[in-house]
Length: 281
Figure 1 (cartoon, rainbow, N blue to C red):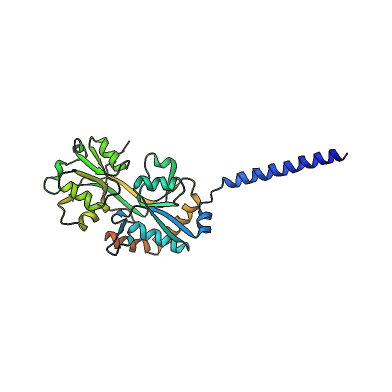
Figure 2: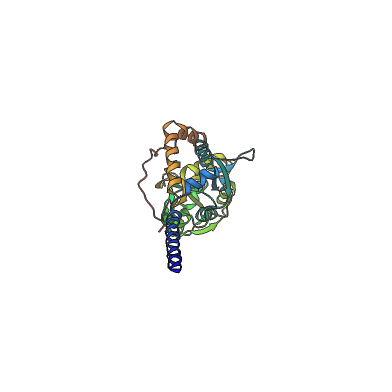
């Protein structure tokens, strides 16, 4: 009789452990992105430190920029510290994918393959794409079709470089280079063109007026928006950030930060009519 009772006790114990194990497994599948950040009291952010005016170092050697100031304000309102980690574009994406960073703040849009693995916060910047060319001869470019045979500069695997390649350009890749290097290489003929965001290019050209390059006028394409890049599973963190961005938009903070860096409000959709849409696929 004792043996039967003992055996029954073991069976009951195993049943309880199995039930607990099933409950833990279910819990482990829950999105804890916000819970983990809140517990650590720190938001870990991947960025470049070389993308003016979104993420760069000022004359006091301080990391600053539009994306940097916006995410700092978001963290402040959520009672969090911010820890920045610097990588090139591929490194930022990898850092987020591996969970080494909670998000990436570096003028990110969401296109192509990224949509399968990542999500983007509410937009903090609306814009469109343009091309930087030499002042003297427009680098021989008057349309996207003229990219064929030209040397396009940029970081590898970006949407801009994929578009350039699609139109027949030869790709010249850089690893987290600064804007003056990019612009100087176009000016001296090492490269011919840079495809990128219009507002970023406008600020770069204005900040370095002695380099003889310009934005190619009226050759604009791909209306887009950018935000903070997170893993697809980080829905609770995304919701917290979006709610904070909504507050910042409503009270004028986003507009104020935007005008500091762009001299215009990029947190609202642009007035320019951009009808051309170009896919990198």
